[in-house]
Image (cartoon, rainbow, N blue to C red; front, side, top):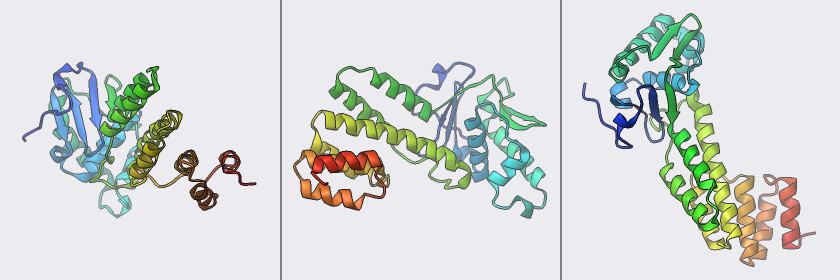
Length: 258
């Protein structure tokens, strides 16, 4: 089997017990020995199986829970438990060269898990670390620049080839973290008086993010700042049901709506 090499960093820089997991725009599993992609694992359930275990970071998932996550109707399988065992065997075979000491995938009475001897970090973890560093930047212009740079690098979809209910909570976690940073960017843009940039930014991110209370709030505030009061009033009515009471009170005051 022809295994690929990392295009993110030098895998040999990872410590023996360090594992890096990329989920945005496709699955990649990295150790100092190299990288395995979803093409190497081949089976859809195999990628989902490994992703779910890695996300648990050492906590076991029971056989029954895994079967119901990986198959729409496990009872329709002739031998569900054997199907899960075969899946785990094939996944282990695909990744075993990354773990010369073996013992990465553990199978116990409590279920399946990743050995706690390994330190697992995802692309979400790395994004979070970089944003924390950016938060320490005193100059707001520089902080905004760093936020936007990290957002650009963190763009993409979690496992785009695997639109599956099993990873719904993982997708939501990624989206919520991204939204939080986007909202911080909008707050900084407003503080810096970059109102047109706010509108452009909202237009860009709304292509992937539906209008929620925060996007509606900053959209209206940018229009108010640009003296587009009639447009702001129209949006205030349009978004009334998704805005919070506190946001409505503030926006009504700013637009002169009684």
